[in-house]
Image (cartoon, rainbow, N blue to C red):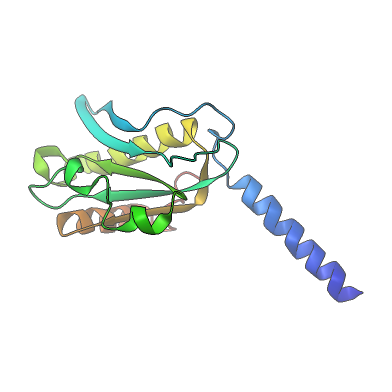
Length: 161
């Protein structure tokens, strides 16, 4: 009997944890996929947002960022996201930000702020599992992923939880 109660409590805790990790965009009508713009530190910034074709506003999705290399751009990363989009099988929301001057210099932390603002915008409009945020990149894009990890030492999601 003790085992059955323990299993029940663990399952209940897992369900509650997953419900608490859902972003505020759950249940809302989603924006369309495509190129989005925002102003960060007085500069116009762009990113490509790709939402699963079978998007369900009541299901929490992984959020995956793909950063481009030096002299690359967001169009080089989207739509494949280093092969991850095919592997995800419509289970993730993808974002390909565009770096300033075709790179990720992060002068004064402006690229980190840009990503933080994208996360806020995406999670307020779409249903994201806040425990399932990822970043990847090639070369300078890998360095940007590393910068995110260093900027959020308790984990990529820590600033937003």
